[in-house]
Image (cartoon, rainbow, N blue to C red; front, side, top):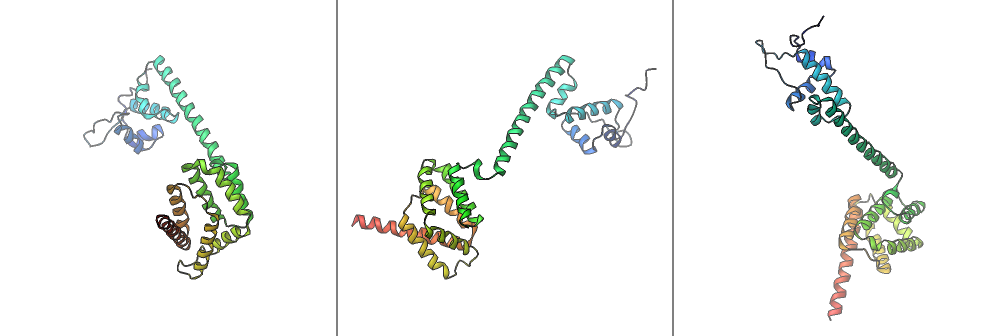
Length: 257
């Protein structure tokens, strides 16, 4: 009438795992972290488990499946009913905090998937869409987006002025022509002689506009981001930087003289 003595029932590790609906690897992991006692080997060299071990393993699996951290399961297995209830309430509150955090992450990811609006102000998003409308390639628009992201992070005070300047630039047909010309040369060999004229045109445009490129760190990162996209573009960036440095040096020499 009292049933089978669970201490006399013996199970192999495979049978134990199957009883609890877990893998043998999981059982060994529980042994390793001290959550489930590991029995000594018998005379034949095998570990034999009691029915009590099966009960304990099922309880462990049930708690783990409910989201209870493994580090807290051992205490729960040996807790009194009142202690168990309080611990479960605490764990439930922690799970709710995690759910709220994951819900927030999902919302942010959804915003990110919708476009540039997550990290850039509407005025900049409008500029990017305007560039798309002018026929400028998506690759070049993405680089423009990244340059705005860097500027906003490193030189936020310059954003309003730069937004005004960019819109004024896009009002000029020559600006659009140069953007499209740069798009066209993306796959050129960096030693293609046709780049010489394009570099001259871009340099003349920069001289005419003389816009503030921002702090050196911002300019360096933006230039690096553009150079990564194309060897031809890297040559253009390097050539323009070299010419700009020559003009600065000549200006300093002239002022000293």
